[in-house]
Image (cartoon, rainbow, N blue to C red):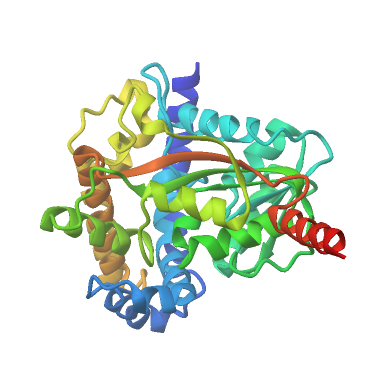
Length: 375
């Protein structure tokens, strides 16, 4: 029974989560965690995005060093939301969400696929198993890569899954390397969408597909509404985002990067269960249906928060851990508010293709042909 396996996995996850407390702070030295936490929070004191976008690598690296162990404890190995039907548990919906995106790539056994912003590699291991392709995870955070490599060895997926430490604004791979590329809720960390998508376009083979689940502001967002702006700012703080883009800006950036748009849809609109339901602390929780998600209920959040407080007091958890727990809760509440007001989506699906002959080459050929005709 799937739900019994879910409950068993949850208990194992909880036990594992307690051992992860020694990993709080990631690669940041234990004595430096409090300062790193303060520096991170200082990036979000003002609504202006320019300081964050100008220092995006530091913002994102600090965030994931500080937050990854909390993510693993509360969410598992796949750090993303999912389109969910009434009959699914959260874990079941997460796997289906990954399979659905992978199905858009059209890849098969032996193909090379890039996961842009791969976290600790939960999706890439699932997608490698689902498609038979070899999947490389791109990540600029050394701590997450070390966790992912450990999980690859533990699950036996080290032969067809690997990692490269790099910035997705400057991917250290030759042109036309990958048969398919995908990203799940990761390129929202990019300071410039066109620059990020252009790098993905470059390393993707002609005819290849880039499939994406993007975090976006929706048409319901009103920049003049103080409540909406406050929600936006807390989402940025609680999730390590330098800025926020609208769905229209994302679509426009893909086109400017050279992609042909095959599909675009906000999947939030077709789900039975709201995407933010797993982190809504006041939702109705059923231990028999989805025991695993207890940790994100109001009770579960508070237990975790005060447990971390106690461990920080006695010196087991590094100083600053409680502040991290606090801004993560603040970010989660803002996501719930963004979902309930309809101003934010985490499931803007785009499926885009790199043309067999790029638009830039077509223009070049056209100019050469015109020049030859004139002569």
